[in-house]
Length: 418
Image (cartoon, rainbow, N blue to C red; front, side, top):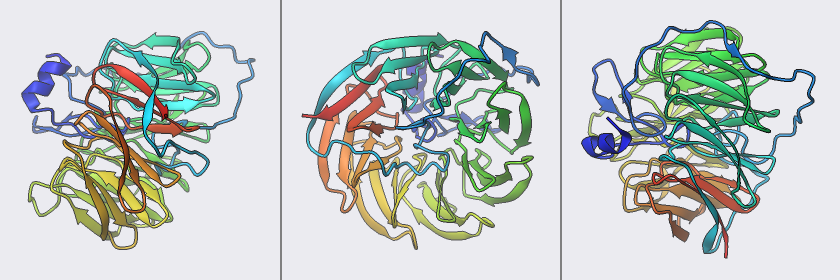
């Protein structure tokens, strides 16, 4: 079944997380529930490769370690969804450029060293010039690329629905190594201190060497892992479709604690000031809505939860005393970090699967109504909205005053102030 047919069959039930956009994940029951990065597709199990396949690389070549912009999903390894060094357009915008892939774009862009890296459901990873959108290179995997790339130290790390994690040269897209999992990889990699952390629909969380893809450890959860890991203070935080949020040791993957929600967790956790913030598809009350949770990063104790009227697959952004997140009930929420009290909400015209980027007092987020929105972080007032020509599951990356985002019609946009 192709992606458009599946969308029609499922009523377009999508959420956002890793690439900003979550995808439907099949659970053990076979029922479809939202999960990270797009929509679900049929997958075939493959034997796990314990060693990566090596491609051409030059070990003597010096690669810049300068990381700026939005190097990975949610800007950083803590998934904060913000960058204090960036600015974005506050007034009406116009298209600075657009570029087309051959498939729908659920992946979220990484922007590093004046280049935009993004995946497409045509099976390719693309590199576009940030200034004008000219294609620098593309690399074809064996299936849809819903995972959002991470660009670190001259290498682009990304997952594919062909059950593989890839490391590509940021300069020309040449494959440096690949690692085969036993399930599709829609989770967006977090790259920290020479290790790539990523989840798979084979229920595992993996820690791979950034240099050559060698597996350092894996941890098996009870369901598919589409959530994108957060890595803070020697701990990996990640959700699973088994309904739990996990805290794992970066050293060996040992479980530190786990917390069970009412349903699957595709949302990528944001870890800020000792608290883990994330969404789940349904709250314990089984009212049909989802919930946003705040847990102690130290031991997983629930600090508070806030229930919405729809799935929460969007990954929270945390700035100051506020948590920003989208919901399938069509709204964007601002919640107090200390107790989850709603500070404001903004209603779009369709489900909000995209994850917010909060930059310089403005919340940037997409909606399935086909618009990208800029909202005041203080009170939710709309500063501008821009039609994108397709559903926006991708999460915006805002770098140097430009908003970069992908859409379901296969377009990657750069929006700048008029």
